[in-house]
Length: 437
Image 1 (spheres, rainbow, N blue to C red):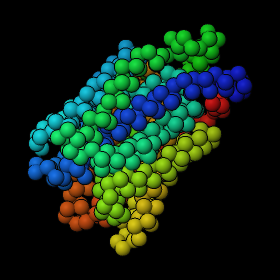
Image 2 (image 1 turned 120 degrees about the horizontal axis):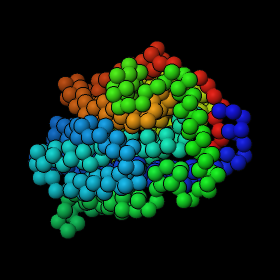
Image 3 (image 1 turned 135 degrees about the horizontal axis):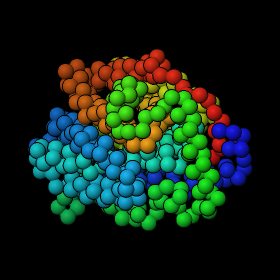
């Protein structure tokens, strides 16, 4: 981009877009993540059910991602063709219903079935938002925008952890239902309401945004077109879905993202139990302590994402974040550490994981275009999220066969491999000046 892209007028346009889109998408993802991982808190109450066990929890937590895997790519291609407004609304209403229905689980089989269907319902949401951001922002703003959007994961921990802990402590026995049932029901309601409102709040592309002037629409579309021309000049000419699947760079991104997600869900589902085992038995305090690592991550990932955009550098931001998280997880697993030191290391580790994931998405979106971007982003997310199935099982197996420290070492190993793959296997695209946002 040329110097004109840093003009005050253009900066004002991107600020306008950001204030219009990011808070709404941020709220959507907070609800998505709460509904996805609140099973970790429900576990603390579900343990009273005769059909429930750690093994049932591990399988049920992970089976979500099998449903997610099978429907991710077609869902994102549909979004690319019909628009984000209606498709995201369909996804949110579907997963809100399935999340609430988790309250009727009565056996291991019903628990597995509902978790699988929840994954089917939510499939396409996250990669759909990543794709949607490419319709608005040139690539040199994307790490920052994705980081802002993905702070929702961290904020869902900050908001959802105390809320879930409070619900577990106060709703037991209400109208004859267990606390875990109320947890699923009450945390699904906001998703349903927001899903119904999405068609009235989102615009599919700049050209369809009535809240932009014609000049603002033209400016955004011109920058995106210039971005596509830059990709072509660098040799990134993939435009069909098949091009994405045939790309070695896409498969490398799949492997990197797989390792990062091992770190994310290896802790997301088990963190409440880790905190309860090491710090406190009070469910309300478990929620408060669990919020601390996510609060640290919310700050860290925005700082790192902003710095990545300012410098135009991706590889070392992603790789060092993953390696730092691996080291911190390894340190948290040392036997005999004081509980607060364990919490400090977990905070550093989760911050590193979130910085890895948020900066990571600037890599594939810089090399894919058109339908290839829709298919490639979804495929990377699908393959990567299979780690969401494997990591709870891995942690349960290591925890049962050895101890919790072995499980944390397993997570650290996956992140270390991801960090090395980024540093040794990728390179940054040509650096260009980013417009201010």
